[in-house]
Length: 480
Image (tube, rainbow, N blue to C red; front, side, top):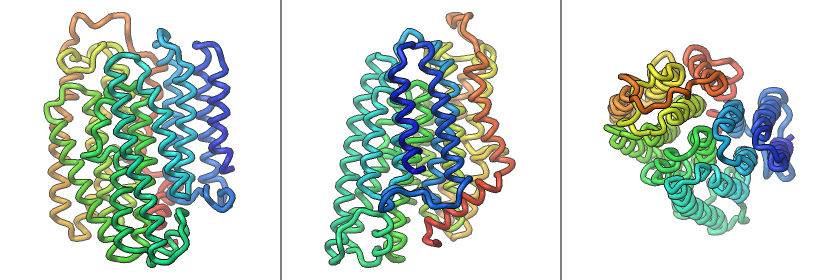
């Protein structure tokens, strides 16, 4: 099973690359997405037997189950959108695009299953390489610049993560232990690791994988990459790839948590500070933002900050952070795909040119507006529940200053983001907007499905998902 989860999307990717027809090739994406999701659902909910490989380098534990379920579900929803989108973009060949999407899915699965620091690093680096051609899909100077910036900054981050991995291995050698990069062995001997080298390893790994998450100030690749990428790619970056990077951060935090109270406090303080800093940075740049796709990039920076704050606070906030991971991924699907529809019709993503979207394309614009309300924590949507859980846990733990700053920043983001969104959806559409381009069922149905799930999680959390998130939260805190 563990190998099948990785090999299946790779086989479909090879089949997709072999198909010669640009018209029929994209229909293999939903096949791959549905098949992978079915395997994931069986592995996560359908069996109680351990899912692992030789020597447990590959292992599906409670944390991996959450991340794998999120990214597989999101990929399936995007795959439903892909055939209609690529038929509209018939001016561009899609062989590399389709094959790389499926390969990206396989590499994100590898990261979710990896229980060895080196193997996880390989998976994260592979996602960087296979994503680059997806960013360059539009083949224009701006997408080329975004691709190079993504590769350059991502490579620096992944290099720091590699150095941190070496430091973590050396922390065991320094303490007289056998060198290892296996997570379970590192957790078992965490109390014996050399504290100075463990500190250095955590900082380097947090900064390295934080770059892939897009935490400020390591986020500088995000505005260009999200602004120039197709909506499908932006969704998978904001909801899938960042979730995998967050998992890498959680793995390192687990080691600090198992080491000692002092080491856990050291990691938590860094995470709370960097989380608040990311939220503040995003809030500043979201005010008076004219490019609505770049606005979504800063929204992603904000929500990565919320995730690490939840982990830093601990207790019930960890459950809230994991629930927010699910809510953020689905809501980003609504925002990126609906924003892609609007961008395609208007031919621009700048608010000076995009007005009256509700009048011109009511379904996509309505979903974009609803997605804005959801992602900013408005009830009755899912992000409200997860953010409220984190806030209440923050105040319950006595972190009143952190909780106060958190609420103020949420308010600033709501105002700044709202101003941009309302400029897009309100008013009258400019005369230059083509009259022959409209919403279609194929490009709106997957977005509606995402929105339905976001609303569902705000009103009712299915018991199997609730249990999975609770198990993952307990697992992260060392309650095995």
